[in-house]
Length: 252
Image 1 (cartoon, one colour):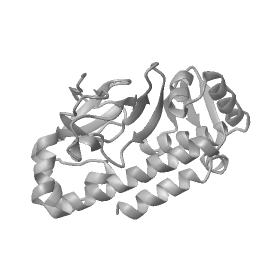
Image 2 (image 1 turned 90 degrees about the vertical axis):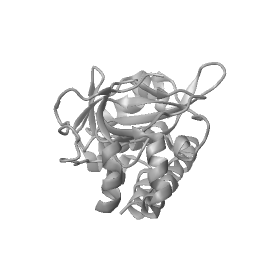
Image 3 (image 1 turned 30 degrees about the vertical axis):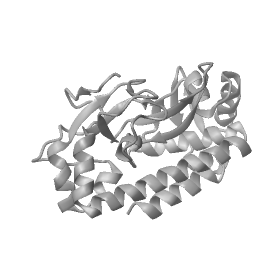
Image 4 (image 1 turned 180 degrees about the horizontal axis):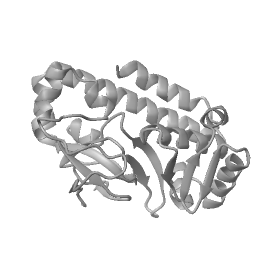
């Protein structure tokens, strides 16, 4: 399993090094903790760079660390015996990667890797489990996040079955846009989006082209620019709103 390397500097949009004297974070789950609960985690947290396609855990492997994305986005992909796969869920600055480890599962059920490079905070799994066992408020909040994540996965299953590629593409772009601090531009290749949506690359080309023709996005050389966010919301299905409302309800 590949591991993250410590953040060696502050890049565009990155936060300064995480220390006990300056424990600022843009991760929504961590910032939802009461200060006295967050302080219990601070000694165990470190800020790391996470590279594009970097693996956090493969199916059957155990997480050694929990990851709390700040500007990166993680993807969980379920693989078939023939090597094909489809995205089962995504994780950004609203939560944490390593739910299987938090639930004390022996191994990850999916391949977990980085779909948008950026920065995350991480801590040893054992340290988070100990803090959650000791402090009810930490355990309660993380459990609420897990519930929200299950809602995301369940909604994605229905969305992939019932909605067309263009709607699903718009939903995925909006979710990614939210997680990269609503930056106008982020990298995305057609083959990668095809994996995320569980469709052929030609289908993604058609869907992205339709969104571009409507003036909602611009796509060139693997870079997506959100031009009209409100229009993209209108082009998406109701799944985007449902999932976002669930996270707003369950995480303060």
